[in-house]
Amino acid sequence: MITLSRLEALFDDPSVEAALEATEQSLPRGVRPRQLKVRTLLLGMLLAEADHRPAHLSRVHTSLIKLPSEDRLRLGVLVSSSKGPHLLTYRQVEYTARLVFSALGKDKPDGAGSALLEALQGALIESSVPAEDKLLSSSFAVDWSDIESFSHPPPKKGGPCADPEASWGRRHANKPGPKDELFFGYYFSLATMVNDEGKDAVPELVRAMTLSSCHLDPVVSFVPVLERLCASGVSIGDVLADSGYAHRRAGSFALPMRALGASLVMDLHPNDRGPQGIFAGAILHNGNLYCPATPEALFELGPLARDASLALVEAHDKMTAELSCYKLGRITANDADGYHRVSCPAVLAKCRCPLRRDSMGLSFHRPEVIWPPGPARKCCLQKSITVPPSVNAKTAQKHDYPSKAHRRSYARRTAVERSNSRVKDPASIDVAKGWCRLMGLVPISLFLACALVVRNLAISDAFTERALEEQRRQVAGLAPRPRKRRRRNFADLLAASL
Image (cartoon, rainbow, N blue to C red; front, top):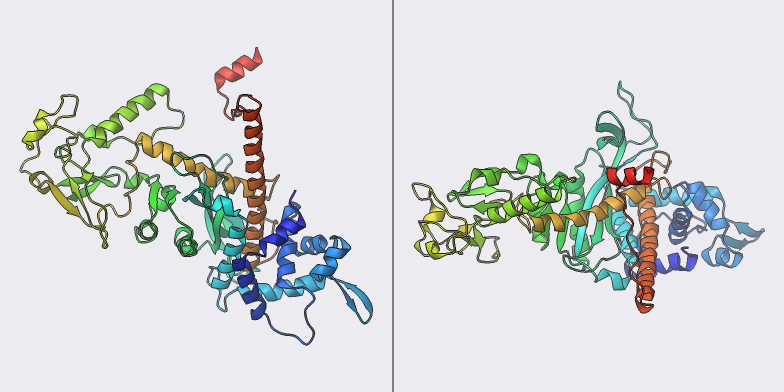
């Protein structure tokens, strides 16, 4: 259970204090001092989300007035006046909320959050991550999802609607019929912490989020948020993204992420797979440069299906390993301008080629180029070539696609899918239509940030509890708790029916 004291401790973070002070200073001054402070309003929003209540101001008011009397006095929910004790009213909550939403918004709304809003919700989410967990990993999985506005869409003949910042978007439908459907609302993007390659599991905590209108590209809107996260001192290592991110222009996602020092692990879009051109005689394929004599059958390899048999997996891994023998190997790191040098695979003793006499002395277990390309290409005449950052700018990534190493590394991306499902789970937050009946980007974004804070605290508690349970079992000499199988095949169903 998430207690009041634990939620109040989040506001002791210096970044949260600074953001709250900036928000408080931006509010207009009235003749009488406001009873409800910004800090108490956000605390009420957190209390409402912690109690699995919808994002309604009436629920915020209920959460505050139901606090114990000493807490109400301390937080200003109950104050003394000339007419006696005065308990906070719903109209006061609505009035303060309207002032806060106006201060955090833009003078001319454009579908994206203001700098003050991004700073406040970013600091609040980061404060929900325990200090000891922030150093466990530098890898993040990113993804976007949808959230509907409570407003009706604009009329077909044109005209205003109750939520002018919302717009039409497209989402995948999890029901029979067409796989895509239109909705009226916003896109929200999340960055979830995942374990580094080869390291132990970490709590899958959300470290950054943003909300934007559907007429804006969610990928482009999320890049500045990750840049601010990196500027705050958070180290970004691996960034795992699906083909929706990989298919964007290089300047929209791939290049900014590499500028932050991130290593991309992406699922390539079908249009970006396979040979995409030639550079210095080498073939551009799936983010790498390959020998021009590479067998064409190896270029036809695609990602494995989820239900692939063990035999298919082994055959696929064997072919991707053979394809890597034809890849031009990197021999230098990127310089200040992003240039690096690569060398012929035969020079690196990965394959046998008649154009490289020394390579013909290698073992016959290595692949051999039977028909060298003619006339000889630049990559065949020189021992190494210089590759500018514009080559494979969109598709270059940490592991060869779709190799075994890439498949295992990319499997970590399911963490952000679990974050999205937790947000949309009817038994948890359930951000369906009607979850927030306020109109506009700012209130929905603030309530969503508070929901993610509560979600982070719950995930952290569950992870700590599981770690302690495993430790107790280890001390007692018991076997580790077996993991539950979530998928059942036909053999399981047949055995259960007998």
